[in-house]
Amino acid sequence: MTCDVNIEVEVCECPTQTVNGVIGPSRTQGLASWEIPEPTCPAEPKQPIPEFNGLFTKGEHTVQYVYTHKSASNTFDITCDVNINMEACKCPPVQTFKEILRPDESKAFVTWQEPTPNCEVTLESSDSTAPDGLFTVGKHTRQYTYSHETGFNMTCDVNIEVEVCECPTQTVNGVIGPSRTQGLASWEIPEPTCPAEPKQPIPEFNGLFTEGEHTVQYVYTHKSASNTFDITCDVNINMEACKCPPVQTFQKTISPGESKAFVTWQEPTPNCEVTLESSDSTAPDGLFTLGKYTRQYTYHHEAGFSMTCDVNIEVEGELCRGKAINPDTEVCCCGEVHRAQSGYKCCGVEYYNTLAHECCDETRANIVPKGERCPNAVYYVK
Image (cartoon, rainbow, N blue to C red; front, side, top):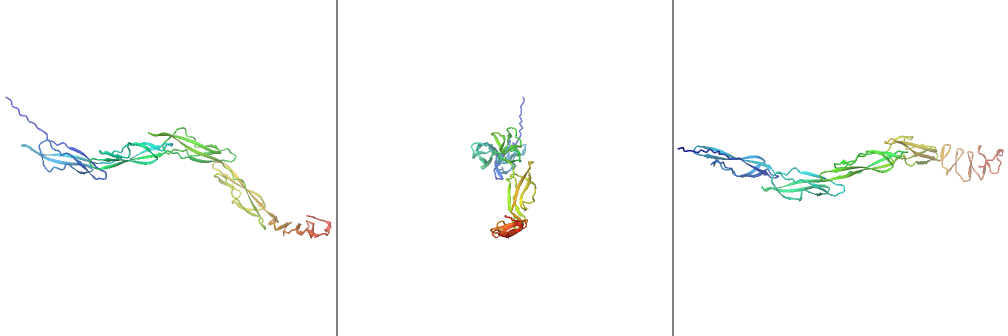
């Protein structure tokens, strides 16, 4: 007969246990807990058994449990490892969700993603019931508060920005030169403050325009995942005829005893931005004798035209041998100045009383008493 003996050889092992723990915000350590591992074969602890939980810093840690197996033919130690991975529980980087406000609306509809932390947490509260809503222009923050089973809370933020899409009106002033009906105006092509594409061919950035007000429009289309609208950029053009001021006449009377008068005037500056090219006066003043004069100023405009503006000067007075007299108190008789008197007249260079004398010869200044005959019977009545 045959008798059998069965032999079984088993492996004594202790599977490695891996535990993930978290560290709360503003903390340097976090709590981790685990089950005490045991080998698959009969064994007794070789050393005191460590606790089954503890505080750990960020990173990887290992807690070891050492056991001793004893049998009639075999004695050995076996180690059971508990690997602990500690990670800081934190919010994701703060995201900013932007939206552009339509020109005809007061609020924009914005959607965003909940800022879920990188650990297992429970949402406790939020100031938004859903990750979307209507917002006015400006910056807004939505907060989400979470709790962790280890006892800490944390708040994660989402930033929301609503911007106005606008296109400031551009105003351009242009000029029309003398004897012209149109003038050249140029400007910078306007663009809106939000991303947009031209809806139609872009007009030129310059052109010829008549006098008055004109408007050139640039139309753009803004497109986003949640918003599409058109926006118009205006360029207002004011065309004005560049012209001289009305011709001014500056008058001055020569002072008694003087032969010239000192006259000052204002430069006849046109109503547009010009550069003075030439003038027949180095300064807006000067000495002038009796008479009428014109001073001319020639200007140049960057648009390519030139123009001449005039100033008239009139110097008045009564002269006697080239010197001015006061007509209220003085009389000039053929180059001789006399004090003016009632009932007196000139006879040549003489000034006589008409009640007592009479003028016989203006050229020779012959005066005789009233009633007497003039030499050579020559009479001159003035």
